[in-house]
Image 1 (cartoon, rainbow, N blue to C red):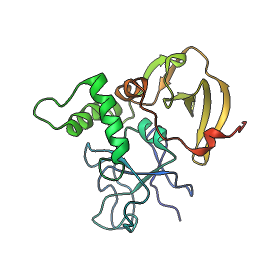
Image 2: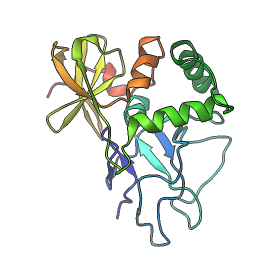
Image 3: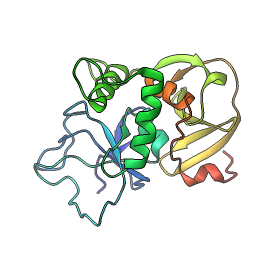
Length: 210
């Protein structure tokens, strides 16, 4: 039986076999029976490498954080996660550099990551636990941004839109203008516009057709 710890661009939890390229952490979300009970335990949502210095983990161990999995970094960003400062240090430094350029540095006596996490939390999830999306012209979205078209999620990449799935992406044609529901939180859209290039699944390099 698959665990309910695979996350889609809408931030929803699923139990599927595809693991993806990144792991995420939002704190301890599961009980001793490995049932997910809540969406998050704190505001520090990070996206981590699948392996780091040979460390081994028991998935959903009692009293330990819940391991979440994403197809790639574009998916993790859409779900509201930022790069981990420990296991993805280079990505974290590139990300925080872009963040500081477009949003400024640390505020209100907080560290920069605390400032980022607080701002992201307000932009990604409502007080009732619902995903926050915003409207924008699809043609204006930067590479790596994700949006919804009906019940499907798509990523913008080099002028094309690709349909998202747990197994990878499928070409859907050129990006078209018009308002769409953007899944990537708006502060992260600004970071992508500044030039931060998220790591994307290898299927974006193939010519897959729906």
